[in-house]
Length: 374
Ligand code: UD1
Image (tube, rainbow, N blue to C red):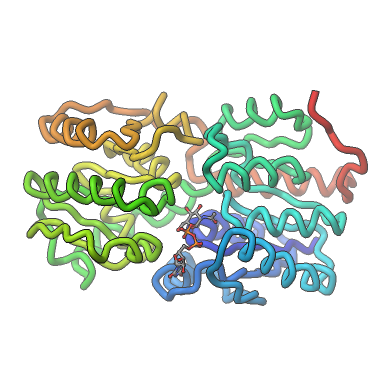
């Protein structure tokens, strides 16, 4: 069997690595890796390939930045001829980024089966670009690999057939489980040793709803400056966010605005943090697994299990609530969560098993009729 993987952005690499590795050990599978080039900075892409031990991409589409329509269209234009030439039996797409939806669209139109890893998550907020990507990708995928039971329920409600849906667990946690033993030694390395031994809050922000509006961004930076007076604050700044910082004038001695970290350094930072403040999807999950209090600056989440079972609290854009939640955590008041079922480091093996039973059952083509909504 020939499987072609499409990945484009930082969180895709973390999800694809364990799947590629499990497929490589499973025997007779040929793999082709396509990087769309959505993320292209060395610290957003290359370092992840190295640390996660992903082979160099066979093809880089070099799409780069642009509007959503531009980025999606460029991936589609360039990918079409690649899949026509390479003729994969199955294309795997990951997560909810523009590259994910674009690749699924190309393959669906060419009648090439698509498997979506991390299917079924819903924030029910269609102002989020990722929610649109999730809805479309799931409707046109053939195999849907879900991380938790809520995702199965969402797919079922949207009319996706149960036989296409596989509850496999969380592949991001596979990578975390594999690499967690390497985290402690990162504190001796050049990126982290200046903060070794000190308690700290770890911050990441990159969602358009948080960083694209100047007033929201200014209020958030003011709140972070206040928080940094109570606890050292480490804020690796995403390129999208970096564009918005000039002119905000937020300076505080213990508010450290730094470049994005590598996977291993960031894992060490999460593992040993007093608390995490974020708007990322994956970090809500990783902190739940690690048992670290997570304050999420969003009104909703497509990962509700991190709130109902895990350590995640939705703070929205209410900066007074953020200040008081941080004070609560610093006073020792926070919920101890539980790790959700199947977040155990074995999700990629379950994906491989599902693919081989689908293949063995001769389901080589996508259904010719639409499953349709009720
Ligand atoms: C994308 C995903 C988001 C994911 C995030 C992880 C979509 C719709 N969004 O958001 O779901 O959580 O990646 O990081 O696909 N840039 C660089 N260097 C890079 C990459 C981006 O400078 O290597 C700049 C771009 O020029 C652009 C901005 O960052 O101005 C946004 O990049 P883009 O990939 O469009 O979206 P993200 O905000 O990273």
